[in-house]
Image 1: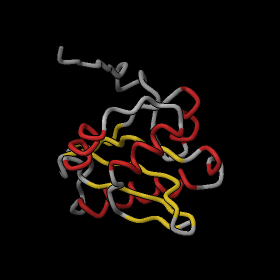
Image 2: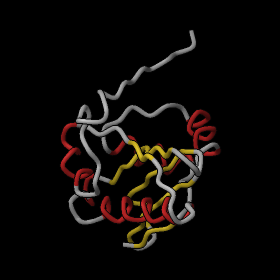
Image 3: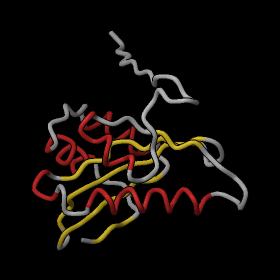
Image 4: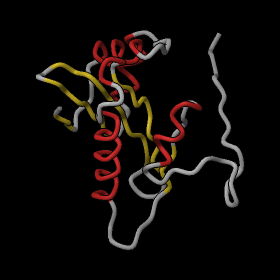
Amino acid sequence: MKIERKMPTPEQFEAIYRSVGWDAPGLEQIRVALNHSLQGFMIFDDGKPIGMARLLGDYAMAYLIKDVAVLPEYQHRGAGTLLMQEMLKYIKEQLPVGWAVGVELTSSPQGEAFYRKFGFQICPNDVDGHGMFMMLAVE
């Protein structure tokens, strides 16, 4: 497996996104989202895209990890770990010595143990309350 710091194409994004059972938005909405992301990450097996993730943020105080997905036939083989390690490495490379930033993500209940291995904490905890989410649609 090989990891690259690159954004998936909208078609690659849609295929990997759907492969894990998520309902993907249309290709134009995906294209806009990818164009406004800080950095993309792709993982390949013999040139075949098998996983992806993207990073949003402000390069100073906050980062948001989004759309971490690996094709089902490649799950539990280290691809997700490589993606997470590369994203966290990328974030550290952006920061001057002495800075600290918040890194956030939303996990499915099944993924919580995976993300805890990287230091993520489940909310609420002693410092943070529950995270919140809203899907806003334009009618």
